[in-house]
Image (cartoon, rainbow, N blue to C red; front, side, top):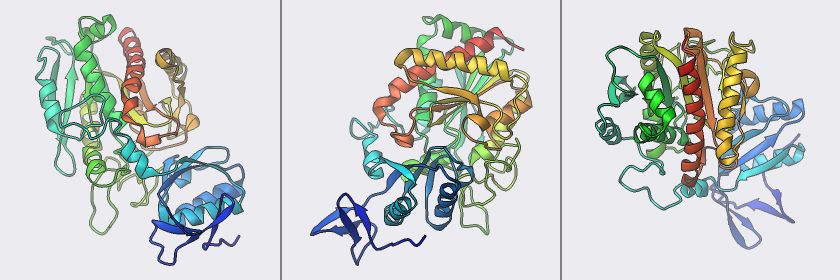
Length: 428
């Protein structure tokens, strides 16, 4: 169907691009109306709608928030896309002409970005209820705060040379204890994720001795916490592009930067739900573990697989608690038990603020995605392997306001402690 780029209906009138249209302004009557990036929720109910979305992604710069790429779009799923201002005319026109149901989730992305910092500018000091820049000082201070319960080690450097410091929480012991490995910030723009890992460390240290569950956990097990997995990408979201997702690696001959670290593990690598296009947000990398950050984590878990009994990775958004598999529709060997634990953890989470999570295997619960860390850990032999997709379900998406950090972390703690308590009682 032909698309008219010259105009689109707005309320009862027409919005017509100004002749010097620069993606910012267009005329409406005698007034200038600001055009800003928006986030849409599209609701494809026909094969033609799916094709349309995929064509849209090929022809203009569309940032997929959920699912993570055009190749994952199917009928009857909510599709959240971030559309740059200069493409709004064409997107509105296409949606109208093809009768695709849609909502605008975020009217102005920049306003939402600015609105994340509810209390004004982030203070220079580290705050557990703010989104913090990446720096070594918090890790240094927290790891020296209680030497009986916490220590640190560098498991390697990132592509840009930043140290990947892993924190080990647990009561010192003469023999090795069973352990849980938890990471945050695989995807750079999911800021609520590193906020949770920092919150977990703070809570573990401050409630040891007073909270029976945490005390038992740290007495009997160790918890390895990687506060930010994709440090280069996370740093870039603060200093460059807020919506950056991938690593920041470069390869000669390609102008596209980075790979998706959660498509780069050797678990059904680069098959379902991953892209071989280096410019894609779901680019699987040039080979399994081509991303140094992925290799560093994989090497550590391989070296310690005899003691690591659970793997927990924190993402956003969607309010899901997922477990293997994502790279295949086959059920995991321990499917029933993994589901039972996930549902118990989701119920614990819901008990605080009523936040509802959906539990299930990744491929059928959200969408197929090969090369994920949880599938890789499970296939390595880490039985209790879980992925959290934290708040929300799309109202703010990756731009969750700072006012939601505390409640999100508080409820997620209940779920993580539930999983940890189960693992502690069911060591294999």
